[in-house]
Length: 78
Image (cartoon, rainbow, N blue to C red; front, side, top):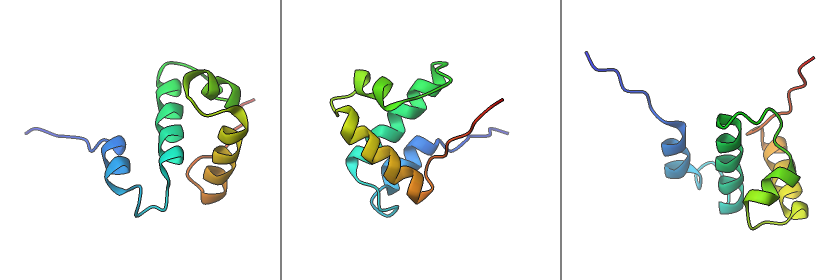
């Protein structure tokens, strides 16, 4: 029996419009996922701006919107 997992990236790219996400939000979500998968324990707007063409102010705005929509959350470990 072959078990295939559904990749959330595929679902996100297929459904982001239905989820009421814009392209900047989509790009930030993908970059956050990428940075976490690369072992970055804390993803900040400054770190994202080093990897993206958006400036820190725009990324802060996108992150705030994603937090308000419930697509990301801030978890404090410690």
